[in-house]
Image 1 (tube, rainbow, N blue to C red):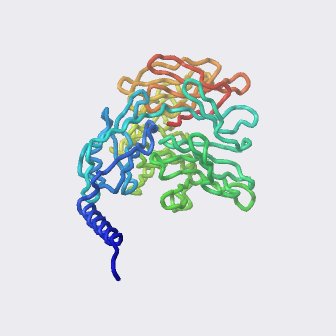
Image 2 (cartoon, helix red, strand yellow; image 1 turned 45 degrees about the vertical axis):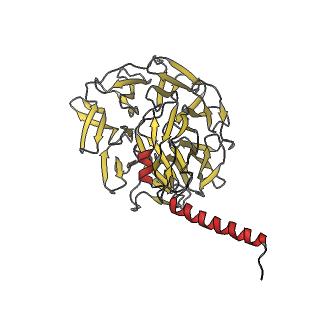
Image 3 (cartoon, one colour; image 1 turned 60 degrees about the vertical axis):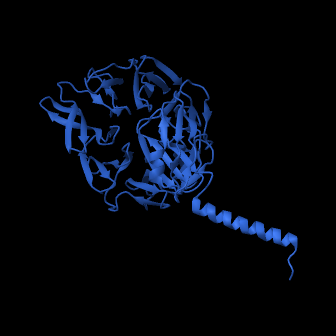
Length: 447
């Protein structure tokens, strides 16, 4: 067969392309490894996800990447081409950030990022979730801190029982009544999008969902339907999303408990064992457990690093039984009384530790016989601070800090009139208290 001029030209081009491809494979990507942000806006706790154009050496990429202004944090590997950054302290929504990737050898096969790349991003301000207190109001709503953009996120015909937002602010888990009389677990996005069933619980009650800080696990209470039509003792279970399974926290079925609470670093999970009147704190990595005696069942005031936790108990004193705030230090193994033991008795709620560690918010009912309770902002170094201006005929509770530790969200409930709670915001810098939503309850932050 005789080759035409066109055939010879085609073969020559094919040979040239083969040689060029071989050179590219040997030399690496001549255009360099490119980086891009999965999203230009992230929650205050991240994660900031970086996608690369080809697989990278994770350690080299982490060393090369920088954030301006500097923010301490931890990088994790999500795939050969994706890294995620989670700050130790929250991103500031008022700050413009920049991710910088200088020219460096970061590719899995020695490829370089050929020129400095700069990617700008911001953190969104945390918003507020709540439930309206009105007929058919058991739905999840969201509102901004300034009272704007008030909107419903669910349409369940009033079937939602409780809910919890993930630390990254991208998902909301909730329990919802099903046709068998039980409660299933569902999730939606922060805009109410993509509702999906997480767990079909049939006639059982699956409630009180709580995301782990990295959103890899979801803890919840489960009460099984028993033969007489009642409900069995509650036990804490977890959904493991990577393993696509759910399991009891304790393999021993005789261990009951409810109210799961994660430490901020995700290393510990606490629950209340009402049968033995105590808080079980499980260290996930080692499987070791700490048992804290508490007849009140109030706990979960974690320190920002997860090494300490407040809980409430009753002490026997020379003045008789007194409510006491206890502090457990899981690193040292020490357990101390933070407040309590006086001649009069105050009734405390569990302190909420600000994320920066400067303050705790402490709900207390004074010893004067009043049924109202107020919130005390305590500076730990001085054991003192201001009281949030309250009302004598109302009780303040359900409090939680924003990520910056400068604003406290709480619920004020009147005691001598119709049940019409309000959701308020306290600014620690100005001392100002603002009503965010009237006639609404169960406030919590969504980052």
